[in-house]
Image 1 (cartoon, helix red, strand yellow):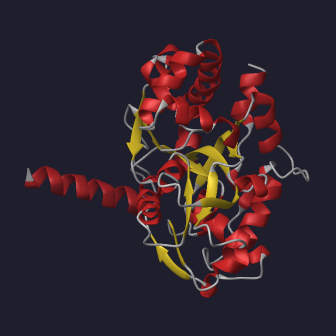
Image 2 (cartoon, helix red, strand yellow):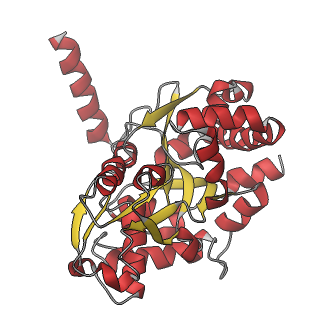
Image 3 (cartoon, rainbow, N blue to C red):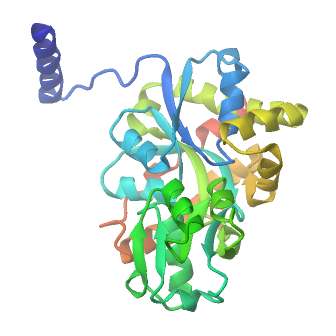
Length: 328
């Protein structure tokens, strides 16, 4: 066993020394996802054999902690991951080579800053105990809202917590405000001692959700990426034709009731194929356009100290796969 381990290590060193790369994946292709309504359709694709129907071997890898999935992609433990635009720009700024190939959705209210009843305005957050998952989407949303009100993170008592733990801390009264996303919003509001101060509905396009591959995988295996992107749109068709069954599958994956899951519907705008092409296409002033929104997010992340520098944003966006679904 020791000889085998030494051989593998020597092979890796040799590949690095001569500038070669090891194979980027071994089937199945691993895609990470976590608890967000816009990503639960992937469970339907897996359960109903839609990946296999398109001739691609995929394993959906579930993460209880969303932040862990981001780290897993950057560490090459996944071939792709479901993550937001700002949570893609931040690791790209740190050197990760990534490609956004699909827009799953935009959050239109399912990311929320939830507060105790006595907090009436964003300015009332000053001096209060506030939690969110450090560096991820709802931390970003919190800082966006505070910036608009003339506040910074230094004006609050910020305690970074994993999203599920943050929701539980608010429900238990240990913090005065929390930034969480559905379905964790249900937990945060479960005691009926909180209210939504503001949400992603107030910041159109700021929270967009994507399928993100390592750039190496996309370069080496474009055919597999194409099949996976097609599977997403096949899944949306399946949901449209089988809504009741689909709700049951997605609610079960989200560990929530079907009624609660239906309540999330208005807070998540699933993107059509045409909306994907527009979002991934040339820059416009539409807040859902990634080139437009990406510049805003990159500037904010650097200013807020969540990224040291802006990455090469143009290299992030790859629209050829959604275009090919439209015109095979």
